[in-house]
Image 1 (cartoon, rainbow, N blue to C red):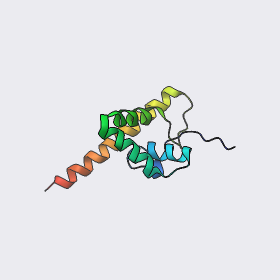
Image 2: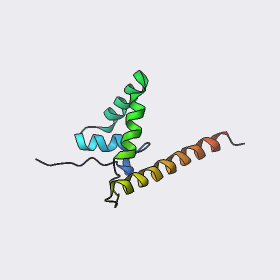
Image 3: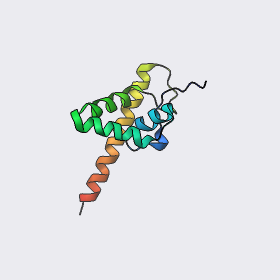
Length: 96
């Protein structure tokens, strides 16, 4: 039996790669995992908190860090970069 480690997949990400990583670990389509997070987010908001916690705690597939603290710092930097990218996209949509 093949063991799979849970890693965020940056190459298949829409936001943080969490859903793609969970889907790969469970060998299912990422759309189902994304719909699960969305369903939980719409029902009680738990999906959003769960997604953010997993984004913070699960290392990326290309992470070279071994220390958990260093992985979390790397994940925070990744979160910041993604948020800044989306903010820049929104600003460019409304710029004259």
